[in-house]
Image 1: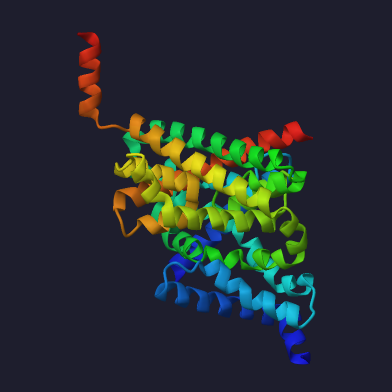
Image 2 (image 1 turned 90 degrees about the vertical axis):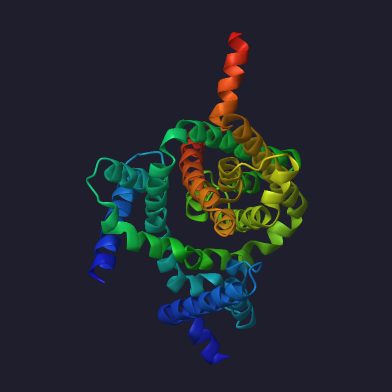
Length: 126
Length: 231
């Protein structure tokens, strides 16, 4: 229990710090600034992973709960959206396929096993 | 009817109602995997609001507390990113390059297609962050003056598409390798896609979870840049 509360306190503090920086002119959203600060603090060892592990898992596991209220707000903009439905759905499908396949194929090429890369270099040098 | 209005307008009651609906949605999701919890959790609340003729703002007095917690949830994403980054250390630069290119493609194709099809400006901007994990997508959408509710709907749909068809489509194009599947799923379908990989392969889920957080960071950096140009 203490573990969880300590973790939550740290995460909320970092999140508030990110929000404060954003309010004072940083152009990146507060949550992402907090994420970067938090990541940096773990890399440099200022924060230990075990202090925040449980609290972070709790927040991430139940993240869906946190965006329920915003999503319910769709009932207010429903009529506006139904007029744009075609543009929205087509854009979603086109973009989804483009991203999935570009990154998948790019990754297949960039992350190919080291042995094949070694043979390729050997062939080139020959 | 009077009780119904009270239930929705009292912040504590509407908070409890939201948590209960979420709990039920999670139970249903455990039984039938293909039902996205976000849809099931929202439907009863939306129906109650419509039946009781209560405006959304009344319900949202309790709900805004949960919305506030999205900030800390975004910060918490650093934990899986750090933990998985340790495992992937040697391929991180190449993974980061793939994520960066993926983010550019995602933002350009989503916004571009919507714009070409004649959607109004706020709708175009709402499609731009659609492949990012929800809390970050909302922040980017707000910064671009989009409609956060629409962005959430698109994010959830992108996630469900990926979880359902992603690995199959990648397989059609000969992409089988664990890290390649993981990174493509994390970039295109964020947390919902990542969750669907957990039962397939640990390596896929690890890469996907790292890629999802990196996608969020890159998208918000490019989003900030874009918002400067739009001003």
